[in-house]
Image (cartoon, rainbow, N blue to C red; front, side, top):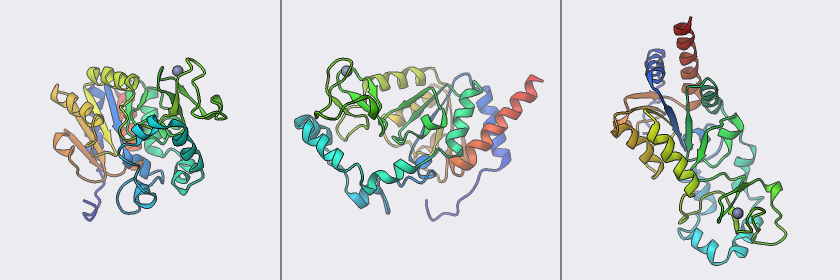
Length: 266
Ligand SMILES: [Zn+2]
């Protein structure tokens, strides 16, 4: 709980986690808002949250989009310079993002499922990545699920049309009431079915379907390694709990894994 004095994982605990990860055949990671917060992006809910300040989107946001996509696009474009987008525009990957990308480059981490829309895993160089709630910088065709950068789509006529199939284009961030895009969901299912370990970082993993991927691996006999400031609902499922922020713990973990692996190879 936020009032509890923050503990930081000891080197011994980090070493234990490193050993466990090195023994796994197919480690993946599940990340959430805690990692964004450490890059200066406020959470959506709670005191100081973006939605607390600027209003929560309506629960039928996707339905509204589908009813009048032109109006939804016009509203979205008129809000581009809102304070709401400022933290996303200036945020940079933190050492936690970089550590996960390094773990992937080392051939250890196979896949990252993130609930964050902030683009920071990509900016850190993560290649095998599923952004389960979309990416705020991208647009997506609702028909063929192709993703586009802002420079690839003309916004002269709204709603914009997909250059590939002519389908309707929406912002990629998954709206309230919108199903998770099937291509992302299938990739998550594919990798979590192969996974025997999940690093759960910066999330209490209570939001489905993301939480389900970690729980499912655990139920199959897999291992959960938690990296979070505080205990949460997922803690009871975790084999190893590392307290502390991702920006502190993940670089230490990656370093410990790298050193151990080198020692074993030599
Ligand atoms: Zn398309």
